[in-house]
Image (cartoon, rainbow over all chains, first blue to last red; front, top):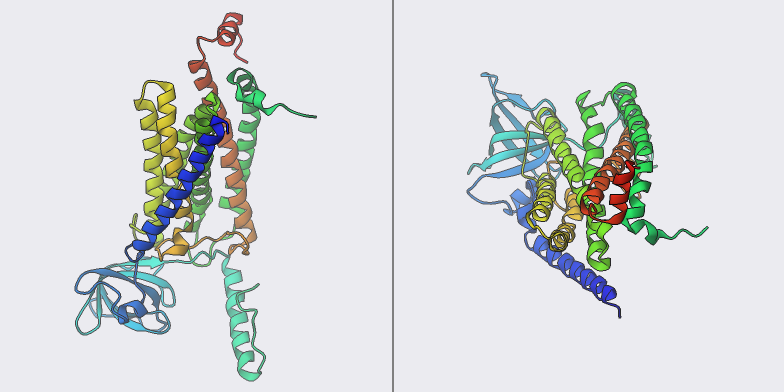
Length: 160
Length: 248
């Protein structure tokens, strides 16, 4: 074995060991590395109790209500199985919309309402021109109608 | 035709080769970046959700890709330097670091500019952003460590080890949006999946990435030539070249 082969083996073994160590550390800290908790996790009391945390999910369609002062808003964050009502006073980001992703930081009050002091919008990784988005939306409606009248389930949703 | 690749591991023969290659990579970089910017900022359609603000991704995403890619290449060169003890490998690794750090900074900076209007925050401590910030610190740490040790061989060994150890961070950055829930969105382009963006946007991003890549090669070759001259200034071939008055 030449000395450079020895060094290569040393570097390779070192890298593998480091990789394993990092994996174990990241797995151990897994719950600390998440940026937000889903409504289901909150309902299961996996989120921190009695202190501030972030709640993430979709703003439920038709749930946004504004108080008369124009600053306080109420909406529902959902992951389609559990809903959590949120109250926030302040300016919402431009991308904040019903049906869109949102991450709110705040505390859960005893009556189950999430009192947010910061609201961030989360967008997905899809980028397309508005016309395509419209066409997809229309195709979805047509598909929904068709699946309501026939047994054939459409598996083409979301594909252009 | 068999090429003796080891020939180019010698600084004396790599120096003129790099000199001949540099202009071509500059031309490629300029052409690709101009086309990429034109496609991205003029031709590509407005986004249905984010309007015009999404266009910053034509700089943000290629810069972020390059920041990770350059780190891997740098770590490989550092590894080669440790295993084969070739001088040129260390020079390549040290020449790559400043450009990698620059792209990391650009990715973070444009990310902040994108995050404020879209998310509502310049910065959040989610897994993607934090690991990218660590990448910037790794680059800076690598450069500082190399510069802090006077003996070039010891400097190469210490900083090379740091570069290799830090490579663990790159897959963490890349997969952070998959492993943990983050504010940062997932990847639009990944292996074995159709890209989730319009074709023109994809083309603009790809061409920008190629342009940044060519820029990196051009600037790294220039930097490595300086490094070679500085390190080999007492060697015969440099002395000879200086006395001839040519720097080809």
